Length: 110
Image (cartoon, rainbow, N blue to C red; front, side, top):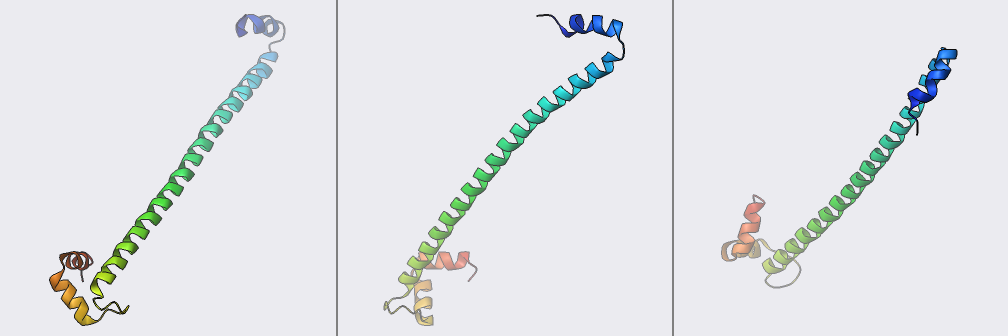
């Protein structure tokens, strides 16, 4: 096909004011296309951010469940008589005799 110069030159020569209308139309169309492209990019980035946020929340919940399970296991390990209560004697005894309990409690600065 022909380029824009070939098509518009005869019209601009006969009617110079038509150049303003033509330039305005071309600029408007270009801005519209750029806006369309930019909105697609922004929507894509927003969807990716939302997906990332959901993944982080799932990972955080999984880690929290793991920590609670570990803590529950340690409490069961500390409760020697299995009555559901931990006495200070059981706690001190477990701290002195079981390295896993000692390491966990020291990690908590206890």
